[in-house]
Length: 119
Length: 114
Image (cartoon, rainbow over all chains, first blue to last red; front, side):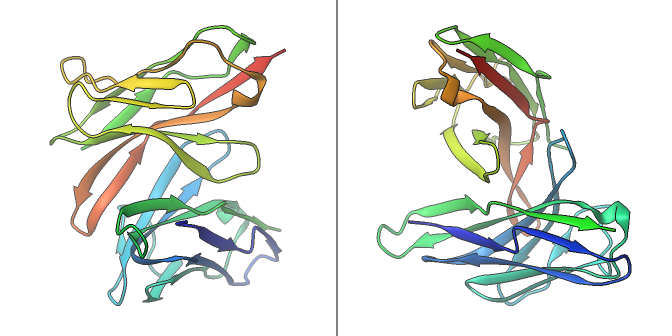
């Protein structure tokens, strides 16, 4: 249980286009979702925290207008990289936190990540 | 603010060798501590955790003890296998204005040779 699906796993786009990455909790309701960015050979950097139905809280230095986060339902959050440029190329990872229906345990589960390559 | 420091890799070991990956942290409160593992091409998976001082987390032969006096959470395994080759991340959990958040260390790549 407690599976998080992230889609697409890899996307290549031209500079200037916008790319949307989806993060879905498949068998639990995610009250909170986190978006991370991972640079090559570096750790995960928290970009933003989003609670269902409210605006995302962005970490310092992360451009809100550049990285649009929507958490419209308890099972889906999206990250849109607007007007992507080569420097936005990175590995983006989401995680979701919520209680499982069966055990009621509070879980934190990561998606497999989405690799963005901007040409 | 919170921070996590772990030893730089890569760490290269022979099969059945003893593994230690050091992790120290700074935090304002009383965080929970975690080790995550990232196998090639996969997402992060929780390996083990400890929620209070002197707790020992263990899983798949890995162990780590929450040492408040030394602010450390070193990962150990007595006999590594080739299948343990992965990147290991130490992390702490604390609360920000929006709820819980994880702070990660830089990751340590482990390569186990047969």
